[in-house]
Length: 173
Image (tube, rainbow, N blue to C red; front, side):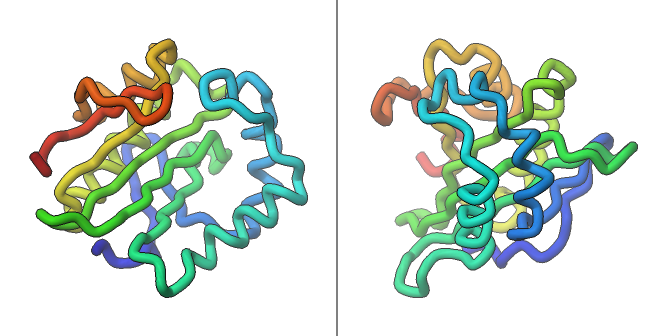
């Protein structure tokens, strides 16, 4: 399994900063637009709900779980502004660790390639830490997220998880 994240991941334009409970106040505005839930359902969390969620995520899963929750805040390097998040849930697999990844970029920051840059960095980091297969679930109507998955090196598998298409880098096949 990958080591717990303790350092930021740097890209040309972004810093992926390990998530902490203290990020909730800043991220409430970034993630507060209901349009972000168009394909995933639900609605934005309140500030108190986001604080509680981030505290849980930063603490990690219970020791008896065989998974790691890895979460980063995505920031622009030029001004330090938070623009979104990326996450990976890493679980054991027969051929080695597997990860399910996801990304969210706030509405004002979409269309600038931040999701692609962050997703590529995440996939690269995971592969560099021994993850054998990386997947993402993408709603078939979410063309922007499908483009991010493709640019991050994932391909559609033809499988579904609920109403979402499963994409994979297929290194675990």
